[in-house]
Image (cartoon, rainbow, N blue to C red; front, side):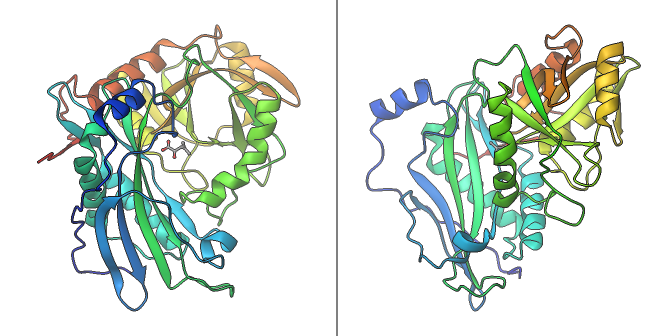
Amino acid sequence: MTTSAPVAFPHVPTPHPTPDAQRAGLLADPGFGRVFTDHVASATWTAELGWHDTGVRASEPLSLHPAAAVLHYAQEIFEGLKAYRQPDGSVALFRPALNAARFARSARRLALPELPEQAFVDAVAGLVRADAAWVPEPPASLYLRPFTVATEAFLGVRAAEEARFLVTASPAGPLFAGRDAGLTLWISEELSRAAPGGTGDAKCGGNYAAGLAAQSLARAHDCDQVLFLDAREHRWLEESGTMNVLLVTADGELVTPPLGTILDGVTRRSVLELVADHGLTAVERPVSVEELRAGCADGSITEVFATGTAAVISPIVAFRSATGAFTVGAGTPGPHTLALRTELLDIQFGRVPDPRGWRVPVALT
Ligand code: COI
């Protein structure tokens, strides 16, 4: 399903750019996921032609046939990454090759056409270049949402033979605004997100749709998000609705559930690579809800936090469930959580050297 020819994204500027003063007003307090830039990157795929009709062009509403496969069978994948304004005014992406590789894996799982990984990065960079004026100053950033949808109008159930890839961009502040004191998670003891052999490790809209009922329950119990357990035993920690989950132990480990039915998060992976410098040993192993509860009670688990592109590193200070509530440590964000968060943001916003080469500058001209 992959085209081998290079895919270029020529820029055709919108004839109706947002006036400077209006854009400045929007950038002053963008919130999360509500403000969108002037352009999109776009490519069309058909079984016959492969990827074609590519470009960075004006953002406008999509026209889809009512029988488009994505509307009926949820054949869709997406990614999330950010562009960060650097101290010298330039703009950098953070490890976009990891998103490109995951997008290709998700495409294979959802039987969608695979965009070559370099084309993914070029599309994202081309959009950031076109909308560079929309990259906010820190602490906000430009959230980028690449996605592919099955557009073929056909009600039979099979892999669609027409699809569209788009990247839309959204200047964004924090996902959990006003929750710096830490999140409370609702442990979902009945509703699961993913099962072995399913799509839990793909980034597809269906996973998020499947999580919404549990998220509503979380909200109803005054929690910020849900923590999913495994589908078989309802016992083993998986991931939160939009984030990976990690625990710090009193004996110096950073423990996180293994990959398989959870998303291979770019922030999760980066944190696992950073923690040795923080005096912690990274351990990927199953963690039961009993261990979480007992460890928080006896102090052997000292901190819990969540990671994600949108969530960055968010402290988790308490849990609730149908079978009881408990607090992590003193119920305040822990020192390792805060130090890792500072280090990650410093790398992303170019405030410290980047020996690992995680920042990828976007050529703006
Ligand atoms: C991200 O962190 O990029 C995500 O995709 C989570 C989200 C659905 C906001």
